[in-house]
Amino acid sequence: MRRKKEAVFAFESNDDGLPKVVRDYRARYRAISQVLDENPKILDLVHKDLQKLSEGDSNGREGDYTSENILRALVVQHLEGLAYREAVIRIGGEPFLQDFLRMRKRVVMDFTFLSRCFCVIKPTTWKRVNEVLGWHGVAEEAVSTSVIRTDTTVVETNIHYPTDASLLWDTWRVASRLLKRAREISQASCPHRFHDRKIRRLYLYVTRYLPSKSKRRQRKVKLAFRTLIERTGWMVAICRDFCGVAVSPGNSALAALGLELKAYLAAMEKVVAVARRAQLEGETVPASDRTFSIFEQHTELIKRGRREKPVEFGHKVLLCQTAEKFITDYQVYEKQQADCELIESVIQRHEKLFATKPEVLAADKGFCPAEEKFNQLAEQVDSLAIPRRMQDFVDKMLARWQAFRAGIEGTISGLKRAFRLVRCFFKGFKSFQRAVGLGVFCHNLIVMANRAPG
Image (tube, rainbow, N blue to C red; front, side, top):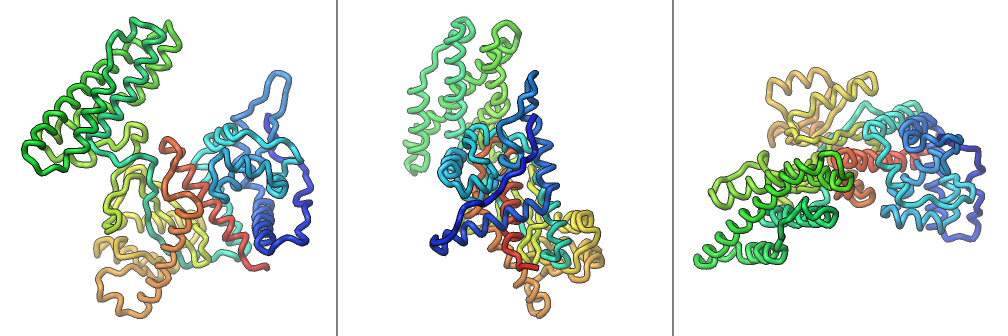
């Protein structure tokens, strides 16, 4: 059983004689602590998920750390922009942060335990936590939801730039590694030999000389590509046969390897099929038929018309923000949608959250729907500040709201720089959602902590 919290005297440290930057640093954490104390429902929601991590034993032993300790440790880790290991080291060496966590001078938790705690909290819990914080801001009159602005951005997944050659090499090396481990357990399970160095030389040759304009070199590259595809296809066929045999009961170690390999198998087969279509048959394969990583198979290719980065690999994220820079709503899309299709859902979710529709909704030109839909949505809000054509910017009121809309660009930049949302280093789409939710929550905590007194 894990306790929710315990009575602890917080912040016993004295700030006298410390530099101003240190006093400001500590004042921010004290303000954040006050916001968390004012919203006990946040801890209730997180505690409900964390209880599943420690059910206790037959003797009724309690968990070493309360849910409050864990939640505040995750907040510190995200605010400081550190990996789990570095965050635990920082907390262990700083008594003030231990006071913030309300640790009562106990030994700091292990970084692997903190990582497991993060994975236990559901993505929907982080959404509800942000909603609770938003309702608190409205009740305290620190947040006004009558005027909002919205925009989308892309949070990238942790993958290398995907090419057919690199994905084929990823497929080969992962399959080879797992099958060799299986052969160590049982020689009969995998009697094949794998020439990793030959395949790696093929991959490097293709990568190095594919841009060459020499026809002679291109013929050699195409031959090397054909060999790479055929050999990788042979490897995938072996993996398919192995998965069919290994999952049968009898040897738990082989079964575990079979299940691990089976998780990659569909993506591996797609990589080989797409490479064959694109490189040997000369077909232009659409992005919907491709996989961009065998490790992060949920990754999407997104084009937003950015000159410095025309193609991004990750997921589209929608943000809605008030004039006080509080993010009232966010959505992480597993399958991207066009911006022009999102405005109606923004209005509906806002009404569901705050029991009223926004008076002003500002967005850029990409959010403008068809004329009939635009007129329909314009009747639901007092001012739908979305330009439909360049001439609309002549209107002074629309130009004013577009200047207001531009403020969300700074928030997006801050989320990516300060809250590690430029790239998600967690594995799987659910953890991707968790990372975005925690980043938005920490941003909103700072907004609430910086609010004017009274």
